[in-house]
Image: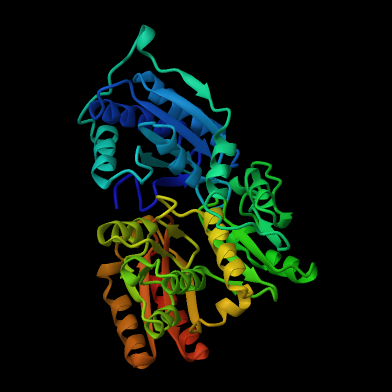
Length: 449
């Protein structure tokens, strides 16, 4: 993990950690790196979610880019995966997304995609960091006609929606679905997309005001969608996060269908259709043991990576696999996208439901999920980096693992995007893993202040 860029770009509190000055410096440094790696005047497109700070940071990074001679296309409010798609579709040299994903409105972030639609390589991120933090190079000062210009995109949303619609194998007439847009980027795309595909849509949390993104809604607060689906007798519901790169679902009974179950459903379906590349699914070590057992039962190889969708994607690219993701709802369908895309994932799930004739709960019930406890422990920024060295924490983890034996597991890791340590336990006995998890979490909180 870099000094500015974590596992998912640079992220922090807008205007104190992710400042206008930093955004401008990132723009200038990125422009310099791009110029050195292209033989033409670079072009960069910029998108953002619905946070109030998005305009401020978009303008700052655009200014930095233009000052070093880069032309900028402003997409406005779009999902993160729209930037990943459009940078390649429009033939641009890079794409920037201003978003803090599932975090509250006071956070914001800067994520950069390369011309292929994949996230910026580590080496290029490190080069940008070195220009900003170590001043190894000084971005040039461009004057006169060499300064970059800013253009406003006219068709970005419709072009992206049409791309998603073309991944549908059939139309969804007769299906009644709820869409929780988290007052974020999906607010400008989801209703149009699924109506275009024939579904009867019931939309909630699609009125962003700059501060209500992810506020008691979306994929981080599934309860509202669950109640809405049951109260209105709908077939199912989809919940997106602030930048619409995640998807969680609820079935007609309001029961959560998380990323693990959605991945399992997709992997089994594509295996039965002889379309599962390498007969494999890529998940992270945080995925539930129940998913691993389901894959074993169905003859699917489940590859496990470090936590982070970038590591899932690296494994998929390296080994030629097409489906992967995280329990949190980052699902990658590499045949159609270069990154996680919540709305594309929803289209794929509806394809499966329509083709199999099964309901979402019938599909999901084939996967038995082990009880899981996840505790997010707030720690200091310095304390987070001491996690692997603390002997008391190591002893607590070892004691829990010994007690669980083969009937469970313990995972303790530092968040790549927040000042948190995540303590996760799985096992057959919920009361036992809750007790053990609380013990470890208390020690982490004490030791990593």
